[in-house]
Image (cartoon, rainbow, N blue to C red; front, top):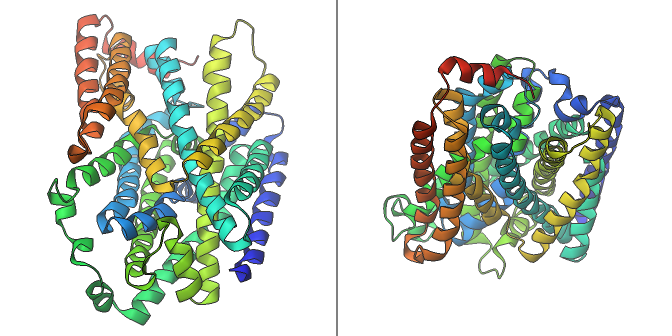
Length: 474
């Protein structure tokens, strides 16, 4: 394992150096810090979107779930994330980019008012702190494996490095480091998957698996886990449409068409790398054997069964994918807290200089909260699903119908957010374990009913008024 240490240290040092350099690109502007002045071309935006989807959850978490539960449990993560990028590209990227937004909760302000914006901000911040935690957990596991240091110490080191370059360059730091980090992950996982297929063959790999591992009953029967797996896919596909980090990249695109095409490009890479990770998870079942901690199966397999340089690329790929997502999410949480909570509810005028300071300063409590969650519950794959369950329950319906239904009202949005969120909390306690997945799928249905009913009962504006609201700036 120690042979992996120096490549990992060099990789983290390069990421930190690139991120710190981007401080020069911000030029004292909070808008440049947040969305890069809305100037990013197709390849940059597409790569950055892929970097947010291909993270520690879709790689390390995917492999561990495949090893411990079965192929479909792990593959559900990249399938859901890729579907989300396709949905965002088809329905949301162009109209939201056209609105010249700085954060996603700002859409709720323009469409539904301050109260809805505050609810959306709180829920998405909670969701993304959990998402950051999942990726910090993956970073810490990799550092711990290659260095021999404790998980807690590595968690502090990883969090500190990501925090420093996040506050230096904002979205510039996220995008520049994404471009470097994600290509290492792509090369590493594609080479690893190609190597195991070339040396072992698909037939021998599947022949060595227990029959239940690839059983389609995992998707078609409740007893086989089909309800839970479908719930995970649907939750990621639609809940990720509320992803703050995805949308920051959509907003940074230089045109609506650029934003739309970038989503499709990212979806392709997400499914490719995700399925490569699932394949590695399948191979570990027959090669790693019994292991106490499923999170260790990918590091154990890579170090023992892959050529050194491919193993290095896999280790560094997981590290980079996790760092890129943690960095982007940490950034956008602090920006939402500064813009959509502090500024919106402050009685004093907030200058651009103050906004830039707040956007940086609020990253510190964000990093601390995420690191604490990662310490007490270090489960990358599970934390991703939990994160998007939160916003899937209450915020997705107001987002989509706010864009496409002119009769949507503030009362409908508030009813929808509260109904879905409360229902998700109740379902967590009352849905039996045998019906796992229903607790994810039922709350958005109730949220939709509340939204439509609330909007129809309080409808007071025309389609033209709604269009004016969408185009207005706060």
